[in-house]
Length: 189
Image (cartoon, rainbow, N blue to C red; front, side, top):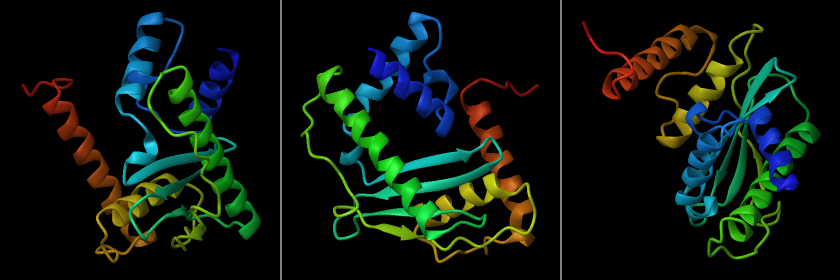
């Protein structure tokens, strides 16, 4: 249980997890979070695992673990300035947490998951060569935009650059508003 609590704190700090599923002081919410994670099954059984990392509470980047046949890789998307070593360390950290989470699902969640450990050899680290931001506040939008372009396998239909950030912000707001209206969070007057 201690291992789980430590990892949950790490995951909460490093990744954006929908607040409905974040474990907190109430057992009900923790159970809902655990049930949601267990019902999703083995993360590596999905085509893509997407992570958003936050460095020092000031900079966002994205990591995509691609499990599609003949495409296995860990893709790093960062609009800031970084070294190859930093990219490799962040990719390795994400694989470690994913491996630990799979072990938790296998043992505590009692899912039928192989104890296989994913490494740089099974999923090579690839620099996604995200466009570089020229300011100190668009990194989160870049992370979302770059992931969206990768997911939809588009050759950047809208160039992900400083000029398109307002458009991406509007797209995000529209999607959030649509979600809120469809789920009843916001009821039109």
